[in-house]
Image 1 (cartoon, helix red, strand yellow):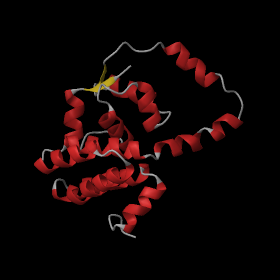
Image 2 (spheres, helix red, strand yellow; image 1 turned 30 degrees about the vertical axis):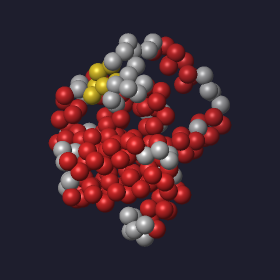
Image 3 (cartoon, one colour; image 1 turned 180 degrees about the vertical axis):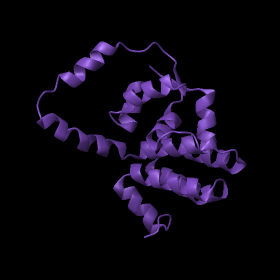
Amino acid sequence: MQPCKTDLARDALQAHRAPLAMRQRRLLILCDGQRDLAQLTAMIGPEAPAMVIQLIQAGYLVSMAPAEPAPPAAVVPAAPPSAAAPTTTPAPATERRRSMVAARIYLIGILELQRHPQAAVLLRTLQQARNDEQVVAALRGALDALPGMTSPGYCERVRQRLFEVLPETRLAELEQAGVIPG
């Protein structure tokens, strides 16, 4: 299944006042009809499939491909009966979410929502970045410019989410550059 935003979702993301939790907003930003459920689960975490179903039922998402059968998904959670498996699973999921790719995709989604000419330039710069140093430079440029394109509260929420997904080493680089108050 490749979920895609509806007009209701686009309106909700632009209004910033929709009755959506932050994790639901993040998922909506990532649902572009290009990513399948497995990719979204890798970026958001194991709760992504349930959130996708909730957002489809609420009218925020539509499925671009036939839904996968539910029985295999129901068998997977029932299969690991040991207590050791759940304790080891959350740590890798958290680590997996901290990545340059997740940070890049998140900020690309944010920049796509902005109706500012500078956002389009920053978006292209971020899309064309080919290595981690270029991505960090593009992230820094976007974070510096974002306060001029949106409200301070929204800008701060974007910063916080970006800092949640950036790898620790890259986070330290942005702190040294003064993007993050030390």
